[in-house]
Image (cartoon, rainbow, N blue to C red; front, side):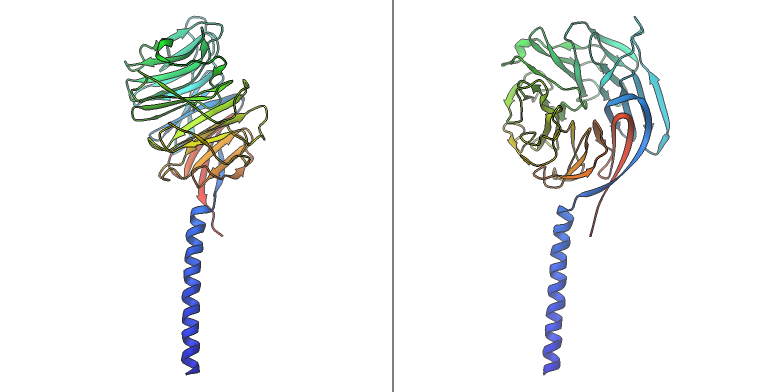
Length: 355
């Protein structure tokens, strides 16, 4: 009898242990951060890269010296380099915007004059003392958008409907409420988020808001946000959407990178409302945020010049992964990303860390 009782207790103990271990593992899988391994692909101390795109299996980077880099993910040592310059005055452009379609490569320079290239040829120019374009994206192979700072008391938005052969600047009457001191940041080429026909553009500066269009830039609504704003160095620096409902924006004040209050916001209703999250918690200033693919909108990575951070709970909390700084990041798949920054492009391999 004693023997059977002992066996029964042992049986219960083993099953309880397995159950607890299973629950612990389940919780661990959900909450433990990614670890990462960073491998440099391109190193050049003379360049800065703030515009990075991945199309199919090809990675593209646009540099501050007018160079377009491209390489296949499977053969990263075979890097192609193409020098862009204006055919009129041989001006070397400083690129902050890059967009890739199935057939074409587009890059746009900052400052005056603005030069927009299609496959190495200038297809749009704009001269103005205040001209400064910050980001560019395409809805499809024919229709694209570029956004820039205020000129003549209105934000600058360019639209193409013919595959980038011609671009038209939107008239200010399209926007219902333009505020002085509002602008955009050319920190990571991630001011624009597109899901199908829906488009969100994040502004910063004295006013930091989100512009939304459901018809590929023909009409716009503007939403206030609770992110830090009021100075020319504050606001949203990057915006990302996982689907038509879930979105996240990050930024702060790049002159005070440790300030971690009111610099992270999210939406669950397509950007109609935004709420602050992880307020008073790291990370501080970050220049780019991206959702990890196939994560149901729960996993994000943010980068900035002071490091890399990861969230597994839709951005409510964050874990610092690395002090290595980057300006921008894009994902090839759910475990491989490419990040760019001062003097380099790097491959980042993510994987769960179990204990």
